[in-house]
Length: 361
Ligand SMILES: *Cc1c(COP(=O)(O)O)cnc(C)c1O
Image (cartoon, rainbow, N blue to C red; front, side, top):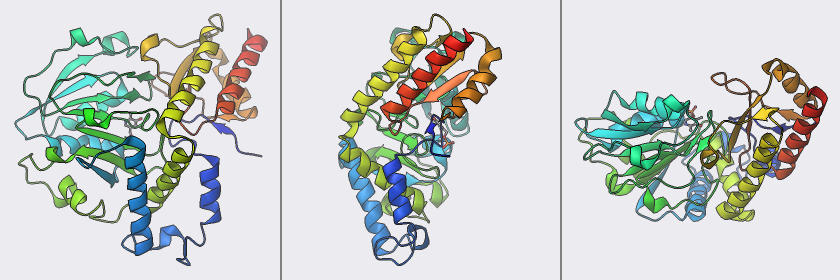
């Protein structure tokens, strides 16, 4: 057996060179005579490793000193619940733009802590697109405006950053973090769980405009007060050190590969190749998402006859292509083609899909 091309939505594929490096230095990391998992997060070696990861992320995203970078636990889900507590007063309203499952979840998680207002939702359109800006119903004086940059299950991605005026823009970038250049200065906060496009599960990154913190007027438990994490370099308590270390290696790999612009080009190439195969299959495969909103990261597709799903999954696995089963909410298939998925992986998938369609058409 050998490693397959892994199209899993998350936890997801990692760069093979990073895994090899992890393997090589697993027993003895640097001069610690122990693995990175076994040393203090407050020791010199780990503190340097952590700071380097932050510096590399700041370089990749051109993050200014106006922003704090936090390395937290709890996943994007916990962050979506903590963000209204940290960025809004209890009497304020927060705006939510819904383009799929994760936006809905973020909204539900916010309701206990802030008045929520749905600016627009594409639910009636089965989340196949992005509501046009002239249909949005804005709230006055909102504490922030939240949207999901890439909806991982539905396969809907914003091509541009929404224009929201002076309201701080907050975005869940879990499944397209560092997939392309992003102008951080447009945002109040960007957050992302690591396990899609960045590293192992267990680490959640938040990039937050510093002046937005500490304005909430709430009496939060100290561990949930993000200002405490800023003041302690994300080490208010023990951080997920192993995940942080691996993310650091992935960031180094990204810099060596040419940074976000290089990945944007590759991701456009990979996704357009896959959509071309779907659209050119004469209806054997379909993707229902409006073309302008199609994700470059998660490509859901249906077979024309769902009775073929089982054979598709079985034969694709035998061909070394794994993780293609769609989310249970939608059925069908989903190919997640994050930064670490090489072009050869997408080529192998397209070849398999064309061969399968011939044999079962
Ligand atoms: C996976 C995902 C989440 C949930 O992440 P957890 O780390 O499981 O909390 C939230 N938002 C988006 C866009 C995701 O892809």
